[in-house]
Length: 450
Image (cartoon, rainbow, N blue to C red; front, side):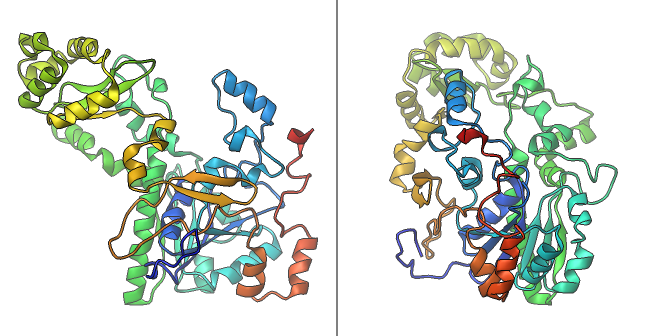
């Protein structure tokens, strides 16, 4: 079904697969976002009697007044619609809602006896359990593979710690940025004349882990179909990202060469970087691989002096004198409109693209012509534009089916319809504060409403 209620005509490939997730931040939720988009029934398991850190953002709520003042000073303190946390900011976080579409939410504290019982019942009804917490969290809850496999031998359990389930760093906490620092990515992508602190956060390890985790799960489901066996999959963020840097590790092991910070530079291409264009903070990315492309770039820019400059006549010379080249090239790109120059360079066979901000991306003629963005109407948030599905299948039309899951939104259908709880048992969990659809004042004080 699509968001407007029409049927796509074909079942999605992962329909019938059910996944339970106990995930935080981005890496784990990104895995299930991808799987939910293609039909998997993803159930977020999250407590309402305590804050699940780095999830819905309930532990860090900023009032609209403070957020507006901070925004005027160039600081981002919240990402709520209109910078307004509303009465339920945990349902209004753009960071969370970006990956929570097509999912369901079940209020359950897996560390409580009642919650543990409900969670183990849930595991008998799912194909996959995924978590990306520090390993000791799952161990303290006594929900390791040795335990859950006895509940459901066909279960696939995916664990995504920063550094692994063994070794001296096992219980070290880290986000994607710490992992990238540990394995050298921050140093590689820093700029030659600056320290890594100026690179900013990219969280590439989290993004890659989402794709790798989804691939691992689908592979494990295929394996179970053939063997009937469930299994645990251990996928540390550091180890899943490190092969991306394989060429630099091999260069060192084979040649003893330590790769210096790369910034926007390329190992052999020049010019290769981001260059200023007309207007404030406007830029274009250009990549020249051959002498023919270099001459084409100079023709488009009317840069005859550069085309005949002995320093830049060959790829080797351009790369050697890339600093001087970048400064000289900037004088020619600075008066040009980035969009017009982009089209001219592409027509001339030069790889180039304008550098877009968020607004320009949303207004992209190309993305909108392809129907990439979708409007999703979420209760309490309203209709908002979301990034759409990342792949297009010829015989399987697909769209965002349901809006982001509100906290505890699907409690009744999961506890009663799926797990078989009676009305009395369900109400007892509500009375104990273990099931609900909001955080109580004792957990999240409503200071922003005062």
